[in-house]
Length: 136
Image 1 (cartoon, helix red, strand yellow):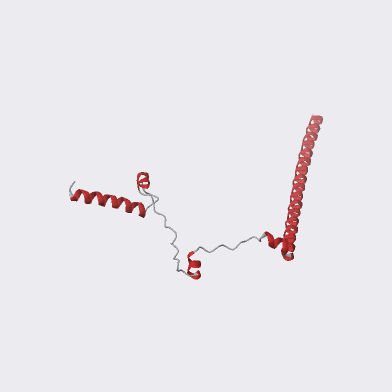
Image 2 (cartoon, rainbow, N blue to C red):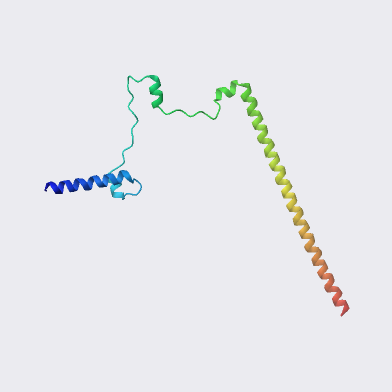
């Protein structure tokens, strides 16, 4: 192979690799399998790094939204808060149940009235048919 062919192949290879890194989601599958993306590795810890530098390198821990179990057992305030939350949830459930029952009763009443109206119209219709027959 001549030097030009070697350089052309090298250029083609580098173009494919560059395309892979520029657009990782739109490249052909054959190139994905050929050139897997490199993942950024974690920075190597410097043995001479101080605590402050080390703390800045490590990801910060998220603050817990829940209370530790030991705090639940020993903290009277936490116990009271849990009881209040439980009572609040129970009151909300009762209110929902009452609202649901009231809505159900309202629907039943509407159905009953509708049924009575149908029966009244049916009876009226039969009554008018009966009076027409008597007149003839």
